[in-house]
Image (cartoon, rainbow, N blue to C red; front, side):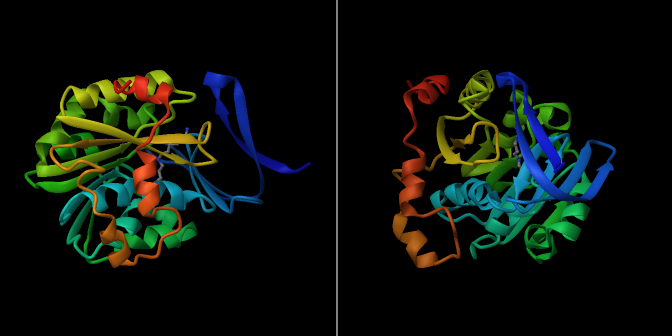
Length: 281
Ligand code: AG3
């Protein structure tokens, strides 16, 4: 019998099952269960609390979109705050921008980073950059207390259960708003409108009650629930399409695999049912 690992999707009474070769890492940290397995089709997979956080095969989609959409919209992003993202994938993408001088990464669980340094160094070694400052502490507390100001805040969280829950509250979004500069942008991973519509609706309503402008963009991430995954784009100033200069992408000439000029604009063209959930329809 093949060895398998799976994620259950209780909302749709289904599971996604992976055939795997090996369990490389499995531990219970103070906060959550962390596992890295070697799968047949998707390379290595990071599970947290039995949910897929990333696979080597498609992590580029999520990490490129969560990082480059705000960084290519903001006119001159210098300081970036990443909440969550202990695997280092989002940081790796942010570091591709020469304008970014400093990244604070705040993840509550150092064990995620340690495990990824061992088994996914192509993501986690980003933490060794001189421009990186890692804080292994609670992001909710960090945003309440820091005196720093940021051009871009990226919330690369788990789902809104257990440890991740505090990263989906209105108070937390308000604290993020307060530490953004005048033309600051917040982007957060916002789950799936296909299978988790009320979650998407709730996140959007909270962001809208704080930010002057909230937009949504989407990407196709085959190994997340439903594969239809979305991100909130909450801005104090820059508009994701009107203030987006596609020439900048060409000029930057980054090594990318998903994000490009057309994807940036296309990602904001969202289907009607999703648009209604986010108060646009
Ligand atoms: N963070 C978002 C993962 C959400 C996936 N949810 C699920 N599988 N139920 C990913 C962290 C990557 N840096």
